Image (cartoon, rainbow, N blue to C red; front, side, top):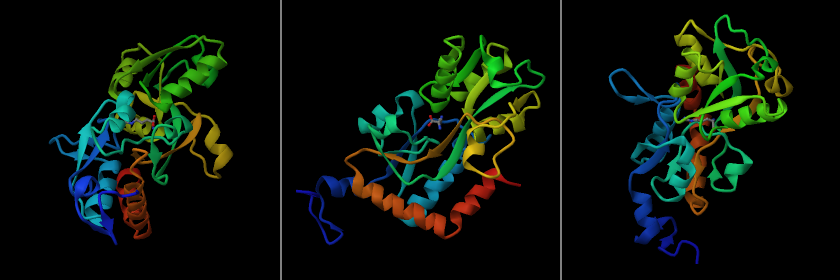
Length: 261
Ligand code: ARG
């Protein structure tokens, strides 16, 4: 019987499902990943995902929520173990993950990009052959690097770091010639440091969009909120709330805060 805990006409009568629907929505996320989830200098959690969670859970669903720091590499098993209820972590929707979790509607378009040092010898993807690139463990950036490695007949060294700042430290210390990672995060580093720039060129984005960005794009990806596969009712409620946030113009406001001006 579906909803055996006794949900009648939208009224929760208690039991397991009822209990689960009352408490704080725990959100697994790997922090820092600026501008999506990070702490300000005074230690406050902020970012695009954080503001979106506020709009969805506090604003639309009248629910308390909290972010739970978790390593990205183990974030899906962690969700399925019940450590938190959902994942909001700039997570790309893909087939491999779709076999382990269910996703919300997509809420953001992203590209894998290549961050390099100003004045780098690397001026095209081909120049990466024989070199070391830095990525975050378990990410689509790591997957993109693995694909390049195959393309180069194995002649690429991939150093995987637990968190993205580790990958950028490797770049800045000349232990890697590039960081392969999501565009908005790479652009953030490029913005904050004169010594970091984006590798230019065309790529996947140009195949899909008329005004593709000026930097090289290895993939086109879409972020989603991840749910356990047995949490479909909640997933539908969150999808509705997400649509309301988009439809009301709130999404555009949040977007503007992190991505323009
Ligand atoms: N979008 C990439 C992926 O899904 C990277 C996400 C990393 N997120 C984070 N909060 N560290 O693999």
